[in-house]
Image (cartoon, rainbow, N blue to C red; front, side, top):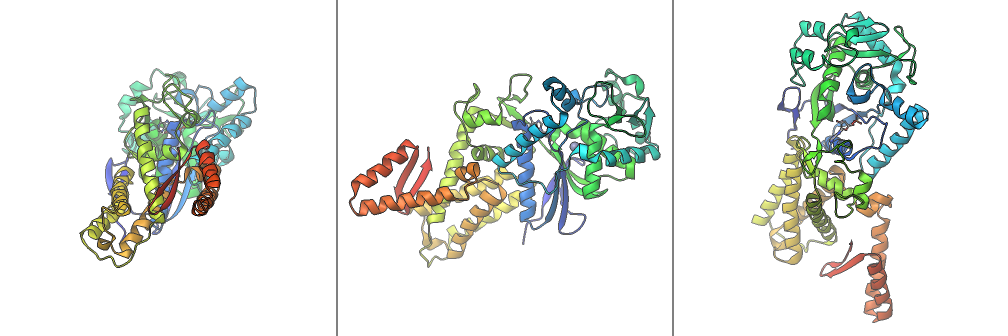
Length: 500
Ligand code: AMP
Ligand code: ZN
């Protein structure tokens, strides 16, 4: 009997039992990256979190339509919604490239990084520039419903009128309209808006703005928030199950998205809003402008003053899984070194477990019961708002049992064959299918286990050489592997290999 899934809904600030709109299927929309610069590790944390959530939903047997967009127009400097330059337009002007060259370059880089972190691709990855027609239609719907107004070729969402009709605006972010009026008063271009808290849904392009489309109001471009309303509606319908993104998107992006959907079709877009917390470095928000940032590449190579060595992508994914998606994650060299030890312990235990066989005739003793409870605990923790760190803690308790059985401190006589096979299945399911970890060699090179196969061949050749007292060959194998920093460890269950 699977555990009941409970998720934390940012809209109600409570944990709620998850109930899909249509039984067995889930529509999930996650805000993707703005592709005007290299993806940073904070972005990766958010997408790895949603990848793990997606994998768990699939494991629970849901048929999931996972939509993650690419923002390739409309995101203005400093997250402004009018009278600022589009991030992609600006980069294109500075680098003297076509905006679509900028988009392609950084989108390719983003996809490469998602592959390196072993994330599953979404089912649909719509781009804002490919959905201008849908966005124009939505602006028209909001105008027709009287919740937007046009000024000098730009169209603004009327937050005051919306607030008069319902108490929806501000519900997600907890912001009050009165505060917003004050907070946003000093922004530029306020004169065009009726109220400081109104936001642009269509923006008339200034002459130097490269990205521009015809519309009934002006040659211009859509506001940033609009694309996600238009694309989630197109692919998931007016009302779908899960909407996700980083916590920094709650306001203004998601608050305004909700307002737009209400404005267009008088309905709330998603039942459950899930937000990931921020990645910090040495206790401060990772930020490029403060010099407090590190690229994924620097983490892989170790080429940064902030870290003492390089870390593998899968170890970094493991590091991310060690904290809950709603908690901040502080990246420090000490934390990475500690995580690396844990990651090795886990992978070594898995490798040992794969090679182990139950001798048979075990009976269900206290140890068997303890293991069964731990196995059940793994899924209970995951079903409690995708609590990866707690699920991992249960897996590590299982690692202790596996190591005990291997070393002989614990007896197979107290564990049934079925329970032992369940440990194997749990490791395989969680480590690889749900946590999305992979053998590093396999993940980096996508070698489908060729490295493992080759190493087994080398280990077998060395064993044969030793049996034949062919010391020349066995020494050569050992020395060559040593030069490649591959370590062999002989144990009673055979020879294991690790990369130093
Ligand atoms: P952007 O490309 O800036 O639109 O961001 C893409 C995604 O990454 C959004 O869901 C952001 O909320 C998320 N994000 C940005 N910075 C961080 C950070 N430091 N930690 C975690 N997520 C972040
Ligand atoms: Zn979005």
